[in-house]
Image (tube, rainbow, N blue to C red; front, side, top):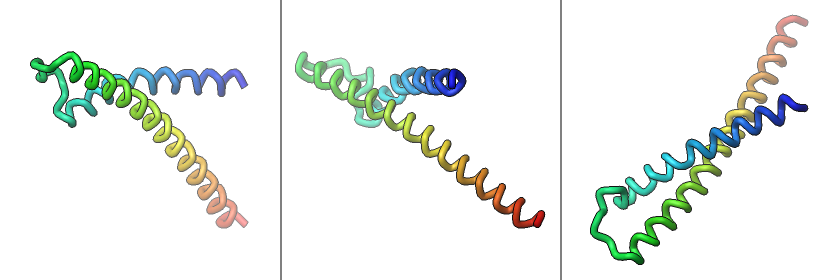
Length: 89
């Protein structure tokens, strides 16, 4: 049980760490990265809100991809076991 909790904690930290640079890529794709220097206070606040939204979406995306890959790994391992059982009998 401790191993599962430790693994999930590592994935949580990894997802948080990856979310911040991925959110910056999100802003860069929108054309709102650091080269935008002449903005009003309202525009700057909107950019920060978009960045935080990008962090949230990136965090959820990283964690979802991790869960999908884990599920696919389980399905593949079950399929391999089924094939081995069919060949050996």
